[in-house]
Amino acid sequence: MPKAFVQDRKRDYYYKKAKQEMYRSRAAYKLTEAIKRYHFIEFGDVVLDLGAAPGGWMQSARRAAGNRGFILGVDLKSIEPFPQPYVRTIICDITEPEAVQQILEMLPREADAVISDASPNISGIWEVDHACQIDLAQKALEIAFETLETSGNFFVKVFQGDMLDDFVKKTKKHFETVKVIKPQASRAKSSEMFVLALRFKGSVY
Image (tube, rainbow, N blue to C red):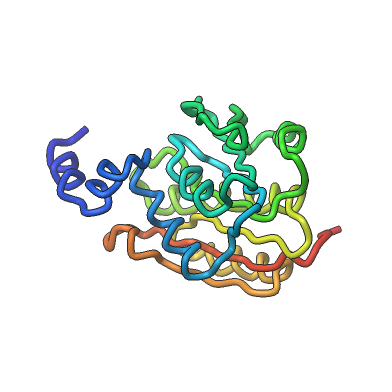
């Protein structure tokens, strides 16, 4: 890891804040900020977190859903277990056809919110990274179609680029309200954005 990157990260306000407040990643503040503003995760909700490692978003979702909620974190990597019985994790590839069945077997009921901070391995080639990120967002959307209850919410990371508009247009067909937002906790120089889709209209078939 380049020395300059490590130094920048240590100076980063949210990196320091995450260390102080025992969050597993600074990314937790992106989700927390969005929840506070748009209220798409509420007490008692069932939340599906895709690309959840190391678990920062799970911590944020758990605080919003409380001990009456249920959080399921899904990732290719193993996630350090949580002590709460209503916070569970599975190792699963969301790009594989069997992913939906694995997830449904773990959820207590249809999800109130599907969230995804999944990222591809960054190549440094912008067109490739943008396309890979949109593809992951598309996979997350497809899983949301299968797991969300009617009127449920969807929150997913994307990268700015020429494929984003088409993804937003597709999402708008299935949700009542769709916004593209950039939380303050996102680094200013980062191209990441988040698509927030509220109130799923139900079956897409």
